[in-house]
Length: 253
Ligand code: C5P
Image (cartoon, rainbow, N blue to C red):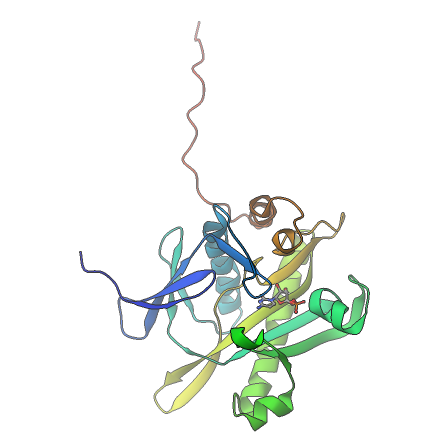
């Protein structure tokens, strides 16, 4: 069998050339990293859960007319996506204060924000993904004003969708990060939600107990990351299919 061509290997995913021009196979690894890869571990099953969860969120977004790069899931660890040019920004939407925002501004984690706050980080591992303003984005030409308008609208629509879905299963969407890609169609370009949406890129807290069900479990050593992600998948009804267990033999009189 011919070897497929690896396009890129990231911290949590590997990208391969897809079967058709303009497509890419996204493979979800079990590797977990935090603090710009200073902390690393292999967490068995994480890739499978994130593949299923990202499929669930991206399909939901496609269904309500928010364009994403997602085409279809291929198997337990891989999905087919449209190839796109990634805008070098991490777009973060926050509904409650947490993480780097709490640290930077000295606000208590969990404080509800009066409205969603959008932040942009320049994607550059060597620089540690610094926070940037729209002025930087325009001055360095990372995105046009039209792109920024579209990115803001996509980010808020994703926030409304994800907040609603998570609320429905008793989970608070504290914040999340998305990446945006450009897809070219003839003379036109369109922006789509790209990369992945999973508990690796969101903060998810149980509404009742406040229990963390996201990557902070790994970042802050709070227990089993697989258990946390499995709980999110279970509530959303997207658990990996396991073969039907064969029961113990029963005596028939
Ligand atoms: O660390 P910080 O508070 O800025 O993260 C905000 C949100 O963005 C969190 O949900 C976090 O998981 C996500 N994030 C991410 N990838 C990064 C940085 C943050 O998915 N490189």
